[in-house]
Amino acid sequence: MERERSVKYVMPVKAEDDGFLSLEDYYGFYGDLSYEIDGEHSDRELTKVEMELIGTYLSGVETAVHLCCGAGRHVAAFGRLGILSIGVDLSPALVAVGNSILRRERLRPSTLLVVGNVLRLPIASGCVDCVTIVGNSFSLLAADVGERVFREMARILRTKGIVILDIPLADHIVASLRHSRRETCRRVPTRSLGEVEIVWARELDQQSRSIRSVETYLFWDNSGYRQVKKVQFVFHLYRAEEIRVMAAAAGFELVGMVEHKDVSGRYLGMLSRRLFLIMRAKG
Image 1: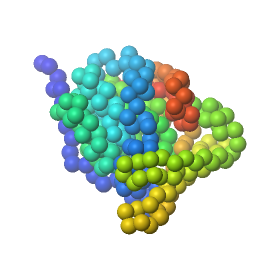
Image 2: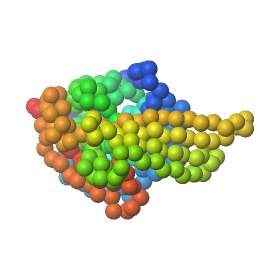
Image 3: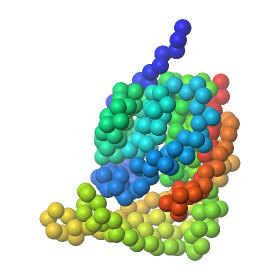
Image 4: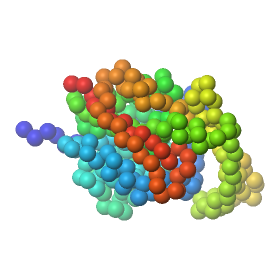
C-alpha cells in the first residue's frame, strides 16, 4: 500500500513571549523590511548552491517542513523537486510575501507557508520525511531552546526521517571580526519605509562563544517623524560536536556534514562560511 503523501497541520499558535523585545518584534512588525534588506531571502543562486550540497541526502524524501523559513526560498526549492513542503515562520509579513511568490511560480498547492512557533509546530506527529532549519537560524537559539526544538522535530518526523541544519563556522566568524567589537553602517532604499539607515554593532564574547548584534534602523514615518528602532540578536557559535550531542539526546544520529563557502562575495558575515549537518532519527 502506498504511503500517504501528505503533511497534516493544525492552526498555528502564537510565539511565546519571553518578555524581551527582539526577534519576535522585528520579524513580527518589520518582516517586510527584513525581506528588502536581507538579500538571502530572495537569493536563488545561494539557494541553488545549498540544494546542490544537500541534494544527495534527499533521496526518498516526499514531505518536508522548513523551520524559520522566512519568505520560503527552501520551501520553493523543495517544491520544484516535487517534494510536498510547508514552511513555518513567526513573521506574518514574510509568510505573506512567500505565499505570494509560491502562487506566482505555480508551486501551490504542494507548497505552503504558515505562521507558527518552532517550539509548538502546527504539524501533526510522525508525518514528515525531512525537517530543515538553515540560514543560521539555529544559531539564534540558546542551548536549552535548541534542545526543545530538536525534540519537536523528532515529534513530527517519521521513522528514519532527517534533519538538515546549518551553523556558521565559529573559528572563521571569530577571525573575521578581528576585534571584540565592530560597527558598520549603510543606507538602503526600501519600498516599505523609504530610505533606511542601518547601523550594526557586533560584539564578540569569547567566554560564552556568542556574538551580540544590535541593529539600529533609522527612518522617517508617514507622519514625518524620525523613527529609531533597535533589535538585538545573540548568535551562539556552536561547534559541530555540541550539535551532535544535542541531537543525540532527542534520538538523532549524525550521518553527514558538508561545508559551504560563499564564493560570490555577497556574504561577508554569518553566511560566508557554514557547516551543514545532516541527522537521522533513529528507528
